[in-house]
Length: 336
Image (cartoon, rainbow, N blue to C red; front, side):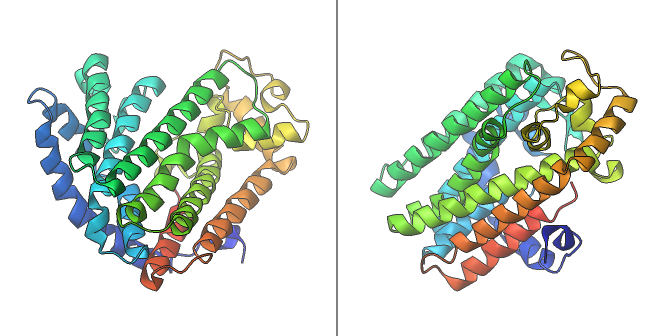
């Protein structure tokens, strides 16, 4: 069955949602408690951001990766919390970079409190993540801290490449995949393995779980790029073709470029201007006609299968493998 077929399936959804809900019940209270370590001035700003909610996918992966290594899920809790802190640091800063005034139906931090408080709130969350891991500097926690630091740096590099791409008409396929591996794949790879690191798992198990997360991140981003163009506005909250209108250098654009099609140039779009409705429609047709939409969907399917295959390379807890597989399908088979 192809990913195009599986996108309409929801038979894995219940299991994945149950797993996410279980993790959320463990992580959310602990996450709110550790924000007490922030200054009284900063905590309300952070709590406003967190009030938007979220699925806590990265935290869930951290908990299950501890279980995959044969430990109790709670062994990965400190890693789950650190993952969420870093992830939310990136969201707060991304909203400033992108100029977004709303996230999860609430005003973004910078829109409500200003750019300065938003920057400091993000910085506070990032620093707290590493403080939390190093409260008890055991061998496992130090190793987990190094893993998270490397992943955070990779994410920042990917974001920097994304910003730099705004001044270019397109990225090569290799450049785009490298950027997306950093922006999305790095933290998911870390989340999928940090619990196992905290559980003292062997290197082969940690690597297999990391590879699962890395491929999951690339599959997620491929689907995200497709939804950014053809997603239902009533579900995504964004107009059809929104990523094209904003001239984002997505995987779709790079695939088309690899086939010799410069989508923005061929639709007459100026580098420093948003695309018109007519230009967006022409670009969507070109992406379909040249096969970029289909090939991007194929990349999502290939990476989903690679993620699932990584879980079979080493002996892992069967229950955890089942949950990780369900979450992979849930993350990919989404409509927003």
